[in-house]
Image (cartoon, rainbow, N blue to C red):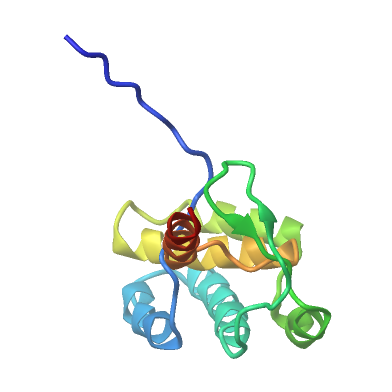
Length: 143
């Protein structure tokens, strides 16, 4: 009998968000308490502001998982989004607030927003599944 080797890849790679998808999340939080709504509002503003610009043209560096590239934000983009990107410690606090949400769509959506914000706090573009697929496809074409 052949042995199947399980490969576990690190990282949390979420689907790419669009402005329409961020706006469509809003009804998921209608029954949430005011603190959760405030956090989701802050995170939504952050993501929506980031989504207004094209992808960075800077070269990426390999992600430690080996699956994708870490692409830094361009200096102009960092300055443009500075006022809406939370500090790392704020993301930690927001995560504790979002931990109160029950498992389900609202929690998943809130953590998707938080994940984008966490990536932006370290001045890099969120690594999304579409980027991974594009990079893998490009790598296969070159080989």
